[in-house]
Image 1 (cartoon, rainbow, N blue to C red):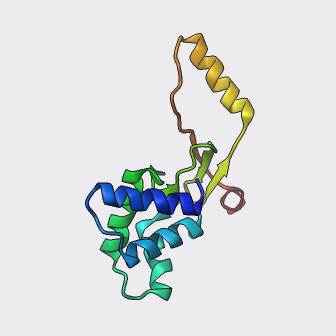
Image 2 (cartoon, helix red, strand yellow):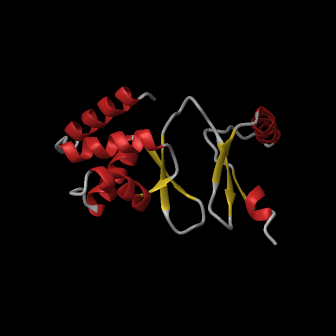
Length: 146
């Protein structure tokens, strides 16, 4: 989903909920889309405060929740006790490698894994609607530390 499409979808969602499209919400959405994925509320807040010191933490938190409610973001939990958000792109599926030492998150795609999942589901008479694969371990940097 492109930036303009996400912005329009968010504006339509706000209207449908009887909420206002504020300048702060627009700034938060722009930074969220620009920043990439796997952001916590705090990480996005810190990024925003550099340019927009009047934006509050609670406003960022509520905005991220609204992004998830309208479908332009997905909330993820990677075992570090924080909710993280990534932009929704239903055309591009990816899985995650999560380092339990430093918290690094790597996105990856592998058609062999996707095919195997479909095969295993079929063997059990199961039809997959959606899935999430998260592999936890140590990244190369943390594995080399002794």
